Image (cartoon, rainbow over all chains, first blue to last red):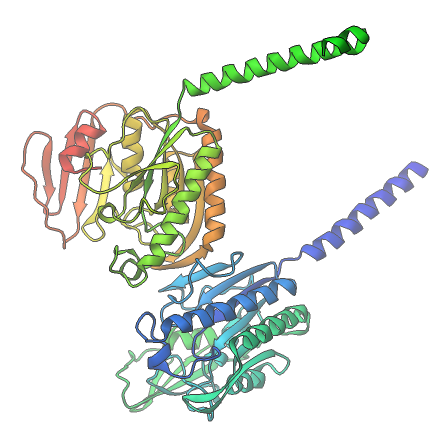
Length: 290
Length: 304
């Protein structure tokens, strides 16, 4: 009897210890989506944002790399067990294995899957260097994916890259917990994720001018917000779009895109198309990749 | 010492015993070192660029001294090669020869190559890459998968656009296969590779026990997940050392009997061969080369 009881006690202890260990080791994989236009110090596309061509591109590359690395350090300090960084600007060729934080896995190049290789295995998504949607007031370099898009609406709601990718992550059940960018990008993000952390590294006074934090201060802020976001990850819910979805895209006059008319694809006027599907993925992929 | 031995017999005996033991151990070491010295372990390293960490674009990164990111690529390749040399030497290699195998052999420099390696640069080299039976092992650094491989970063077979498929006795091969077979013909095993997931798979298909440093994973031909450069180098060094320590477990890849090498060129490629003994035109784009062994057959088609 005593032996059995003590065996039970030992077993219970082992179970408790392994449960605690399992909780402590519960993996927290984070997917970082990076872009360049929302990085601190960036305000001019031609001057700074064209890879290996813009006169100030090397400087931009350093700004971006430092911001991403600061976010990665913050995430790791806050409990992330694995960080994947997707180089999301201009074909994934801005970040280098030479100077990226050594513990990350870097997703570079293109094409990648239309859903950005994101899946349900991640605990969180964060945005680094993101910009507001096309047409946003006092937003630095605002645009939606390409310069030939005037507006995108998802079920009538104005959406840019922040929205599209928050919805994509939500589809996989993954919350977006943090963004770094200008004030307009932060506002756009908070509209979707009110409790999201935001590192406001600059604020626009026009589309190509604004007030900037010094680079070191921007990196420090990003590290701090990333850490705080991942520490609070349990408080976040994925952004879910319910019911059938309509993605409506209005192109600018300069656009030269047409789509094959098929199920769920409708031309509304000379420049506007609607794409309908049973969920955000189904509808959006009829239009484009995320 | 002698005084001590006389003054305390017990302690003295112990000391004598320890001294004798020490002498025996020393002798054993010297003997083993001599045995090793008598049995040099020369390693031949075949390098390429497309399988190096961080590399995913041919145009932006892989054209020597022309690609906008070439300098970075040079650093990445050199770092990986040097890590492999360190690992091999740590694992017991006595000499390492590095063949610069990417694009006309102009990627590695004597300035920053691991000072303990010998570098084979420039061209032409012999059609069998100056490899011979004096080597104990071959390793691949920065190697890519064959043309048409799935989710393989910058996959191709020798020529970036000219070759659709190569088969050896019906088995699809690319650079990994061709060179594993070449080394095998000289009686030299290929023991390790660094490259992407697809390249590792291709080597393991031929050499299941080989060590592989998987530094990246393709999601398409020109995109993928990559380790950071320091992490890739650490992994390569570890795997190279381990491969060298396990050298005795490896056997060279041997092929028996006559060999057929069949090559299907792409439409873009202009290839013509003189129909002669052992050279046969299969169709408009496909040629077959027959020989008594892999070297005999392959050299009717091309260099290795």
